[in-house]
Image (cartoon, rainbow, N blue to C red):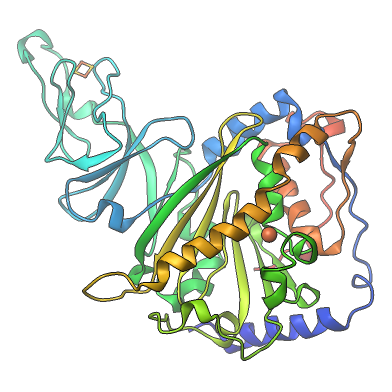
Length: 403
Ligand code: FES
Ligand SMILES: [Fe+2]
């Protein structure tokens, strides 16, 4: 159970936001985010190396590798990574790279195996990655098989959600995500079930679109006939958390409002904050989840190059027992997609605009401070000394970060 004083603090935060007439006393004027952070190839290379290759990233749900031997090939960082359910029930991740001469140990996006047999020369690995057999053993007289397991990738879970990290030194996932796991404990991440996933290709830098999901300043214009009818952005309260994570809680216009599109669906146990408002968690760097008691969408932002990205939406449901999925899910996913198109409609034109001499940088206001927080964290991860002075973001929000 989330401590009731935490729930009360966020509810009080919404009341405060409704009443304020300016940003809080002492809140800094946020400097411009330089345009080059969205366009400069050298900066984007630093971002790739120090952020994406070293971050905890959501990979898949347990249902996608539900039984021992089930595997999934995951390539979102550019490295081929096999996620596999072991005979001991442990989910592990390995590079899809045979220790002999680098051939792939799996060729399909998903499947079921008893072990991995490399199709090039037949080296064989257990589901735990150990090298268990190789052909013509006599021709490797001195090879210590125990020294050549598949190279492991860090793989840890928050409930049924599986994350990977290519940095062997990364701190444990649940430690790194704090305080998010505590906030989500009530909705029982270990009982969620996988429902659906779909990706959309967009021609912009990944941050152009991610930014739109870190603020609700845009509700009144691009979601005028959808989200804005239900949510009142003037009451949005924001928490900036360590490691770049953050949280945004937006009140429903009517406190007793219940989404008619979810009536009768199985509900997760939760608290007043989540049931009667719109909470949205951001797991740094690229996962946004507006959690609801009737279902959880993970909105994921994946770079596909300097000016191309994919936005992926995965849906999870409370356990619905035996039988088919609730019939309202289809409509619900469709409605969400409509809102997603509203969010993506300007992205490609924004990319062209930020690349033009007409654009110098982003001017952010108080309610857009999660974007600034995101960029501050990026500089910490890259290491500010590696970043040319004109592309840095001045660290200003440290005093506002609290778990
Ligand atoms: S590359 Fe895998 S057995 Fe040769
Ligand atoms: Fe939006």
